[in-house]
Length: 74
Image (cartoon, rainbow, N blue to C red):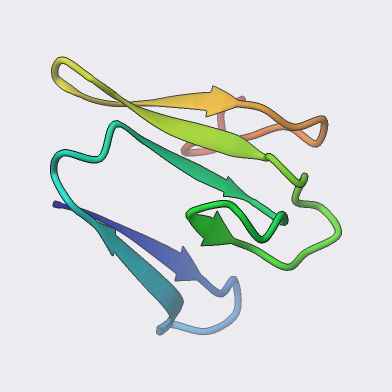
């Protein structure tokens, strides 16, 4: 199982969370309503990023024009 948690930059509690089964091959994140995770923000692309299952975990693939950062790195 994978759980994604949306954190608010100024509040200590999570704003929202999503949980997916272990056999999910990919998770799409963006503004478009057909994504698995929909984020309503002007800085989020319609198709912002994809989390792809790989042998030993997950791979983050940037799909949008606004950039994607993991632990402060592009």
